[in-house]
Amino acid sequence: MVRPTLVSNSIRAHREAAGLTQAELARAVGVTRQTLIAIEQQRYSPTLELAFQLARAFGVGIDDLFQYPEA
Amino acid sequence: MVYRERAAWSGLIAAVVTIAVYVVLVLRSAGGGPLDRADWFPPMLWSIGGGIALSILLTIVWGIVAARRDPESATASDIRDRDIDRMGARVEQAFLVIAGLVVIVLCAIGADVFWIANAMFAGFAVSSVIGGIARVIAYRRGLV
Image (cartoon, rainbow over all chains, first blue to last red; front, side, top):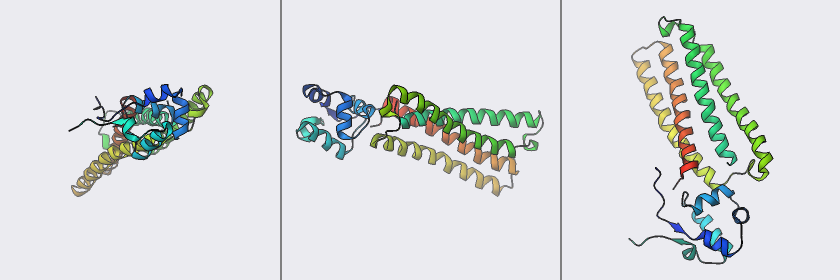
């Protein structure tokens, strides 16, 4: 079993609040729908650049979209 | 399923089929006698060529079928595909290095060319299969 990433995110909540489909958001940030699904389900950690693009797509800070547990 | 994942599956299927066909051809050629007396060179070349052709054919045909349902994902790839491909290549490289070392040892002890060539072929085969499995697992289970 692949270890899930410690980085969690609220992309799905933001996306649904913005009324966007997975395909629309994926197209907006230049990835495939499958990659966006993998990120939402925490099966893939996005690059820093992609994380910034996602945050910018919702007009929020990167900390609002991605969370990392305190040590 | 994205284009690169279909390519990973196609490569894996082609590798398994290629290995099976080669083993059957060589065993049949040996006819129950010593393996190093088998006519291994033409089957090896045909298997390698056939495996590459089968992989390309599967990718194209699968791509055409997939494009009918979802034209956007027919050829699209992104950073996740590149990450998974890099991870798969690292796995493959490890097995190729092992095969290379085995070949050096076989040369050093003066082994028959049959065993030298087939050790390298086995390295290619195992690296393709394990690399393909690693890629497919990364697509299905995740890459973090």
